[in-house]
Length: 242
Image: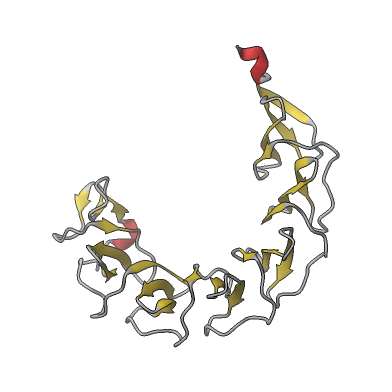
């Protein structure tokens, strides 16, 4: 049995290793990580495909780009455009997109020839009729979608608005909070898209065990709690450092 589950991309990015030892003898111009069912994307020159844990091709077809398998489907591109394939190289659907992402939670973001984004389901069918200026990956059944005016909101798996609030920039929910930006700056919002606190920042990271690293507008860094209170200061204002 192959050790693909323990395989890592070698520093040269030309092959995979397990405990520092090559997993197979072949070498490629570029490899990406293995994903279930034990297949990894590789590239040589203008051709790309997937290999198994022995370094052998998983199928006979060749593409321009190949990416990892997620939920049993991998994004690939050829001269006709982008689509998804199954582990045996068969196309999941006949349509082509101008770009497609990776499946997450039974949905995948795609972009059409006119630059509009949407999501497709596990069979490759449109998950809803709306089209967006941008649409990101789903997490726990919720994704970020950008409207025609450039503002972003959250949508559910059916493409319906989750809360109907819009922001200049937005992220998916992580442990009950999402990073969001309004005219005053960045903050965290709860699952109703209400600000978790009154403060605004130049940058915020997602909460990690109840705390988040943030940057204030003066360049200082601190860690805040979920109520926006300062836990510790990591760096003073930049003007005071010179």
